[in-house]
Length: 173
Image 1 (cartoon, rainbow, N blue to C red):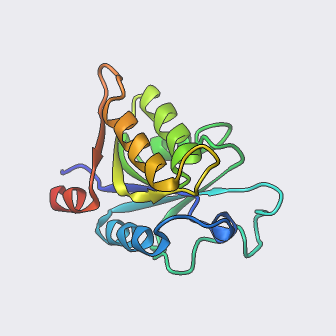
Image 2: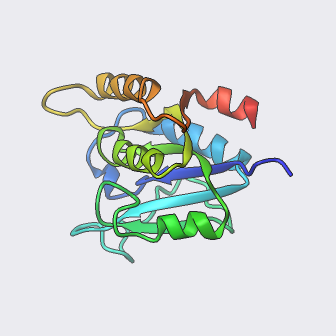
């Protein structure tokens, strides 16, 4: 049996996008391409003041496809593994390899990738399907390229962390 094509989508929520994020339309289009090709999709949603469950701010962006069998995990920290059921959900569904995309490159996406690889999950970052906002020290475009480079060169002996374009991922799937 071939490996499952699993996609993890981080923090693509209405309230998160109240702050301007770069390339929203392009990013969501690419994420939808990945969702359409995936066997399983896991949506990670952040909750805190202003992003309470049950509010419009907490909901996923309306342009995102939500498969009927998608999995949902709620988090309160940048790291999607921190005090959540994510590891149990992955274990229950026998998932040890997945593609990561979403928002915010320099916070939630980065923290989740680093923790996930240290836990032994083989991950591929969709290099052109994550977004962030301009920050005081760097523009969003610079941050995205910087983190793609960091992840490409991240040393994790015995594990795999790849950075590929959406087109490359879809071709391999």
